Length: 377
Image (cartoon, rainbow, N blue to C red; front, side, top):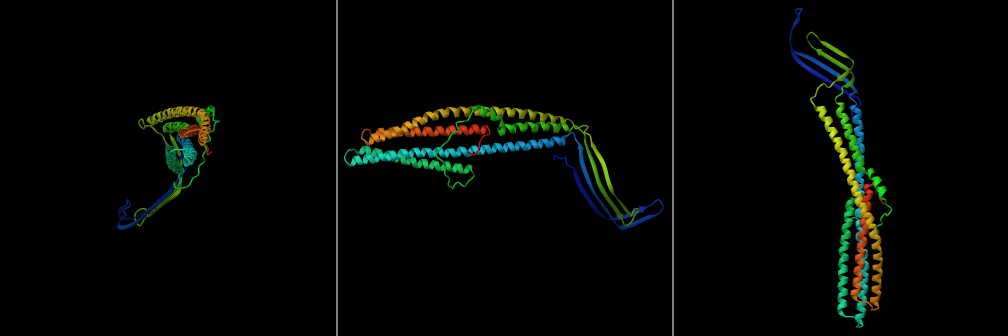
């Protein structure tokens, strides 16, 4: 409640004394004793309730509420960052697995090619050079396949680490990258102002404004109501007063008026004002940076989608070319070099298509993260 609730304080003391008493009264009585025992007992309960202090308590309470909202937005931003990182790591695994699929198909062609050459050689229709070249090509592809499996394993480890899961855990990942093609620039641009970082910057401005009010409130008087109950008891074995006991309620008002404290309050108000202006500038910087990042991500997203469409056609054609060259090689109408070139064309087109899909997906994830639209799909 920012200090707006009443406070209740209980206190007590009990003091035992042994003194030497030398006392002379006006009536001629005198007392001279040693080892005189005395006891003082005091107890009190006091309640204080703040009535007015320039609305500083109200302002502080509002500031704490704004701080809570600010922390919630920062948490939302962290969640979006975690989701984006997980998705990027996930699709990195998909990307590498797609490369493995392309390699496997090319290896199947190489095995088929080698088998045809071995069959021809057995009947004297092929030479050793074609056999050796086909075997070398297959061995190189198998080595590339093993290297790709290591890359996939490392990508899965990165994914599990991002998920804070044991890196030895088994994980199965789909081999398809599905890019959302329905993302619209106007929707992204309009949603940028809902980004948690932008909202947190707004909350920081509000916090600093309230800090200005808090600092300014120190110029005003402070008024408090006080009520309590006191009990006091004093007892002595000798002397003029042998027993004195008091108890009863108390009530009052405490007024504190600031008269002079140098320029401390003025400096606090000025500093709070500068911090507010700084927060406004920081919000503008964050907003401009997010707009720039969104524009770059949008350019990458739209351009890459166009390239994906064109490369998909090339990939389909290269697959048909590879199939045709394989058939022609079996019929003796194509050479080993022709098949190898078709394989390279197919592999290169596949790699380009995979990388373009991953680039488009990364741009989509970035756009949705900036627009605070990331989910777990």
